[in-house]
Length: 163
Image (tube, rainbow, N blue to C red; front, side, top):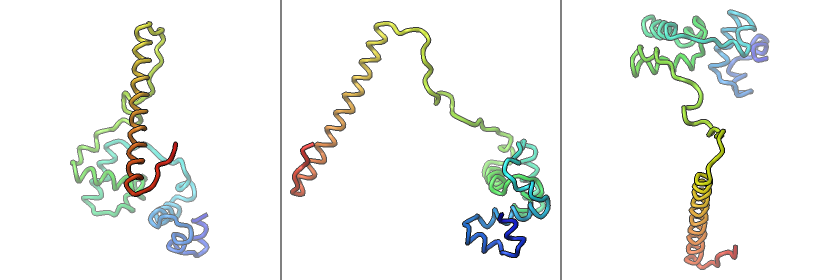
């Protein structure tokens, strides 16, 4: 829709102001649209980039002083991801682009697995004891908070609630 508005003569700045779309995103999308057509700006055209391509993009920007926009047009990744790679390469060195971070939850952050074997009587009692201790600690904390609130209300001359 936005590309058709630009084709009809509306400026990128006017579209940015009217619809709240990022000016840089509109500009990038417009250039991709002009060069490759509508297929280039549709969602889902992402691709995986290996460390060699990341380094090549960063070196091209650093050595040839090309803009982020031009690098995005030439290689395909978005300006924001190229900015991230540049920041990492400048801060920690270009070799750090080789490091591949695992995605998703960290080990140990998943839900606890259900035990297939039944608990012994001792384990059941220990679990119940822990739950009761936790409940008591929570009730003590709640009582302390209520008493603190009541004390503050008495200080300023108001009566505490009867709850």
